[in-house]
Amino acid sequence: MNDYDLIRYSRHILLPEIEYDGQEKICNGHVMIIGAGGLGSPASIYLAASGVGKITICDFDQVELSNLQRQILHSDEVIGLNKASSAEKTLKKINSQIQIQKIEKKLTIDEARKMVVDVDVILDCSDNFETRYALNKIAFEKKIPLVSGAAIKFDGQLCVFNFKHNESPCYHCLFPDSSSNEELRCSDHGVISPLVGIIGSMQALEALKILIHMKSDIGKLLVFDAKNLEWNSIKFNKDPSCPVCSNA
Image 1 (tube, one colour):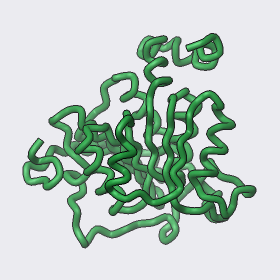
Image 2 (cartoon, one colour):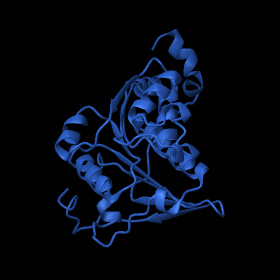
Image 3 (cartoon, one colour):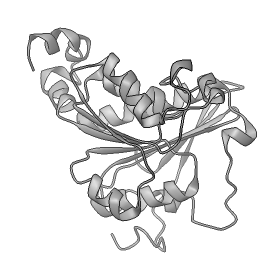
Image 4 (cartoon, rainbow, N blue to C red):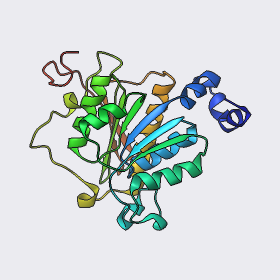
């Protein structure tokens, strides 16, 4: 790090849990964010501001007017633009010193496997089970920590799957793949805008903790009730019959 970095990240460096060495790990880190919407917006903004050296952000969708109520990466001027491209523009304004890699299409499983070769943490900021299950498989195969977030209506969820630890359960252990899984989307059911900010910011927090090798709880689902400002913690274990991680 140079003098500019020492000043910019001084409030991190002052923390005994981070200091110079920890900030250097952050600056050398690579985080992949799947989804540049409600969750991906605050997550990417805080990771960029924190100095994560490389951020790969993936989204095949375009910015719509209805997104602007909560997707703070985007603005009126970019309506119609691909979300990953819009994200790149915003994040470069926040921190011009970091590398932003945009992916403006929906990746196949094989393409995603190739893209995560040098990734340190994956943030699942998607809004559908198909993507979540695919990311879970890839993260488990490559032993990359996965930070999963979800938000709908007034309810949020956060969970860390750290596959560097063999005892970590996976997303499939928590939510077994079933054709009966109900897809809940903001476009159908709505979401209170600050909720995605809360969950997305916590995804960024967990990603930074992983980069600096700070302990994150595994096998714990955090559930947030925004109406009553209540957090609940649900413990769960590795499923011995899980088709994804049972042979680990």
